[in-house]
Picture 1 (tube, rainbow, N blue to C red):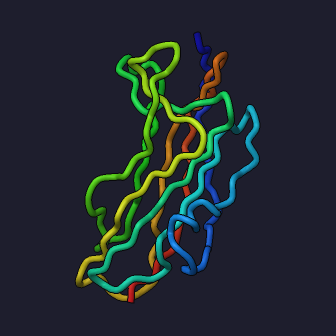
Picture 2 (tube, helix red, strand yellow):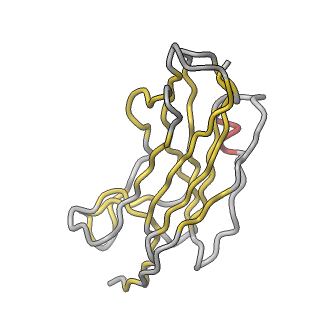
Length: 170
């Protein structure tokens, strides 16, 4: 049974600027991973498919999450005992999400097959759309990732990680 430590805090991560060269999947895989430790068993980074887009155009945003071996984060918990992983984007006025999030596959938790968990390297993706009348300029896209990490013996307090990316609308 997992024991809980509850200490709320927010971690802000730096902007990751990567050129638009190469295919998006390769650029996602190349994102850096924070050092994973028992106090920080989850790394979160994010990237935009392109650094600029025209009004009315779309672009993908991806969240790359790496979970330390023997640790997991929760995808689904019908008991609501554990903090289920949530992900979102905070967008500038005139930009919106287009469609559903593309999610990694979750696996049944060994101690309770009704609970689903994520392990290893994970990619969460969403399509963003700039409105047809969105004014040209540079805009922030904030990626929010909330989770609770557990190993077989202990669960850490829920964490909130945030990555701010910039996109230019032409």
